[in-house]
Image 1 (cartoon, one colour):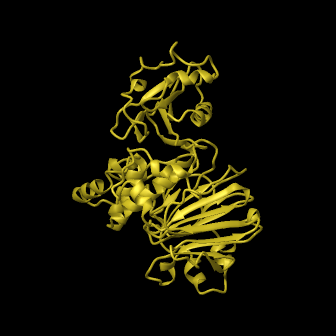
Image 2 (cartoon, helix red, strand yellow; image 1 turned 90 degrees about the horizontal axis):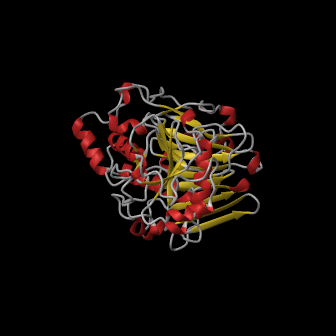
Image 3 (cartoon, one colour; image 1 turned 120 degrees about the horizontal axis):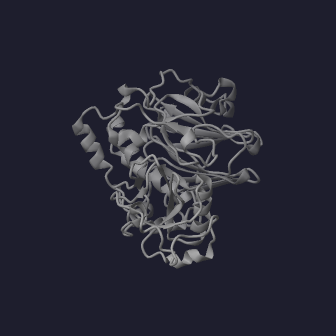
Length: 430
């Protein structure tokens, strides 16, 4: 997912921020190329472009029209330089299809035939400041909701809240790199934390610097924004090379909340966002742009990230045992012998696909994998699964309660964050 300044949630669940004007690689691989465009030294996410062999070398570009002087700030979609999805019906809806290449749609409401139908039944814990999701999506989200279905089962959903929020669904690619991560199942190799003392503790989760391959400025020769329509006037704005110096998360001068009052105001504005990392991103953006739209931006990114990921990839939440929105432990069922992070994530995928009450997993160094479960989940359902290393702890599959980290109060069903502890890893599953 990408939104705001821009903040990224990688395919492996790392959270990073850019704060730089540039054309960047979001996904860089042999077949699939996706680039992002951020403007100003606060890195406003203003557009993305899709191309490469999987697109038969065709180019799809989406951008905020304010780049070309349009004060409305509407989203525009271009396929090989030709605008599409611009003929709306009386409800503001539009569709476009080119066989074997693209099916695209614009909606003014969350469409249950096109988007995840569970979104209107989203868990009560997610009660955003901008309104609960049934109300929010039964009205008209700012800028509309867009959906692309592309070759190789690549799907992109995006909206025009603030500037732009986008979520990409795709399978891992060999040699994949870019700001959306390497998709190797390990979040820790995709970010570096901010320097101690450089930002308020509350903002640390949102101030990680991306590390890895494919993070360089896109060269002029590879710039999909330029290649899409070099003859159009919009190109001059879209392909402008970054002129601002990078203002990275490691720079103590970039702390966006200049005083305690500003931090308190931002924290209050974003208080209803349960996810720790998204809430921190919301606070940082609120301070940077001094606009309440930062709340909309983070909220939209959150629902698209969580509800469009379809649970295929567990999201890395952080180092520490999993905690709910109130910082409390959750119920957990502990395995006897699953000790490797990748195996714990695979078990989370497998069991989570069959048991709705499985919401995450946690693993302690030299410990065993624990699946985090919501209230009302019947632990006896786990008997249908046989994890490696001897199954589950406890004859009644209620094991783990002797461990204070796994005891939990069982009162929540959303993994919102962690209790900081470097000996633990926590993942969340939608």
